[in-house]
Image (cartoon, rainbow, N blue to C red; front, side, top):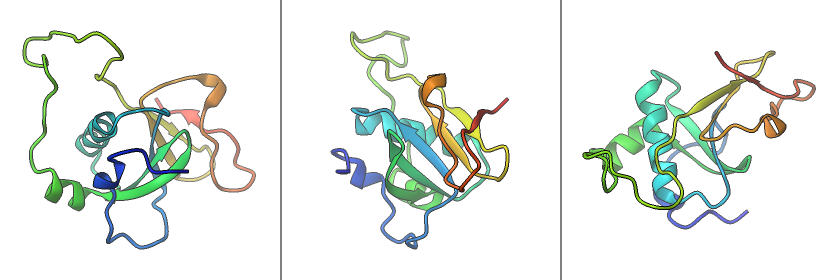
Length: 134
């Protein structure tokens, strides 16, 4: 899979080749601003892990770390209209992360969309579909 345009800016080049056990999964066609917003929200809401896989439609495109994002993007950017609660026409850029977890191990996937027909599947053999976390 090709890395979506701009996503390379979010990938930490210093991470080891083994992938972290937590993933932020984005829908196909999600712009880099959506990916950055989802990563920012993930890092704000969680105290760990320090590394996370960036995926599109379940396919990993790279990984990043809390330290890399903090160093490369020290201040959060806001979208046009955020301050006055205005909305631009088109697809929403305001997302809430949804956590899925494996019932058999500690793997987790975060998504900005929910479709019960496409719940993520744990990478560990035999673990099956992940469940929506409370």
